Every structure is written in C-alpha cells, then in structure tokens.
Image 1 (cartoon, one colour):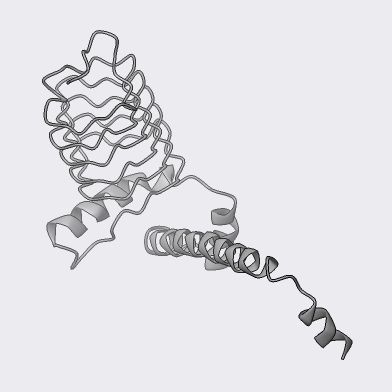
Image 2 (cartoon, rainbow, N blue to C red):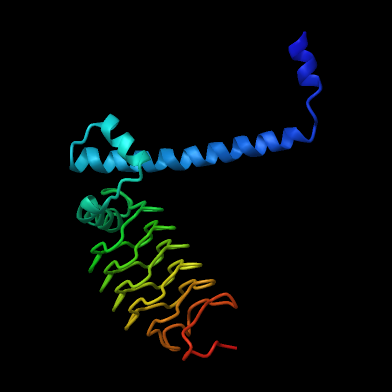
Length: 205
C-alpha cells in the first residue's frame, strides 16, 4: 500500500524527464551495440578474435588502425557489388589518426565524428561519405574526391586540399582555415555564414 501511495505522490513534472532519460540511455546503448557488432564482424572475420575479448576492447574504444587495410578492401567490395558482398564501413567516432587511406574507395562510408587528424587521403574517393563533425586537421587530401560529401562542422584546418574535388560538398560550419582551398573549388559547394574560410578567400555573396 505504501508503494502505491509513493507512486501517486510522484510529481507529474518528473514523468517527462524520466522518459527523456530513458530515451537517452537507450540511444547511447544502441550506438555502443552497433559499434560492438561492427568490431565483432570485422575481427572475427579477419583476426579470429574471441567475442568476449573483443567486446571488452570495444568498450575501451580500441582503435581499428590495425584492421584498416581489410576495412578499406571490404568496403570497396561492398560498393563495387552494390552491397551484395563485403562489409559497409561504419567508422563513426573511431580513432583513426594518421591512418593510411591513400587511393581508397570509401564512397558513402560513415565516418561521422571520427578522428582522422594527420591521415593521408591522397587520391581517395569519398563521394557521398558522412564526415559530419569529423576531425580532419592536417590531413593530406590531394586529388581526393569529396563530391557531395557531408563535411558539415568538420575541422579541416591545415589540411592539404590541392586539387581536391568538393563539388556539391556540404561545408556548412566547416573549418577550412589554413588550407590552400581555392574559390573555384568551393564554387559548387554548400557553405554558410558559419563556414570558416582562409583569409585570402572572399565569401561568396
């Protein structure tokens, strides 16, 4: 009876807060579950790692750098086969600093909020990839293809953008300071008042 009374005395104002907190908890754990599933799939296939060992390492945010060559080949196979083979690259929030992505095919890959600082993407194909809020500081992006790529709020400060293709790229809020990007490169890209451009680049009217 006392339990019933306590429930009846709960303020109605706390009920929405309760559901909000439950929702946040659910979303955070779904994100972890997706990450664990992806790591499991990669490591069991390529390394034969025991699942219990792998789950512990995923929760500790272990880097996937050691598996990067296999990940890139598998995503290319996924893209070339239109999803019938290979594994889609879901590298969101991964620590891939100074990774070697030279000449890779990561079309439509998910790299949202990944730390790619100092990585080498020379001649890489990232058309339509998700790089929202990604860290691309001091990266090598020469001759890379970022057409229609989501780079909103990405940090590209100090990146080498020589001959980088950015047609249709989403650059709203992106940081392009200290880069060699030219006006012609961003002529067909989407920018806004929050896009940080180099001092020598006039903001399009």
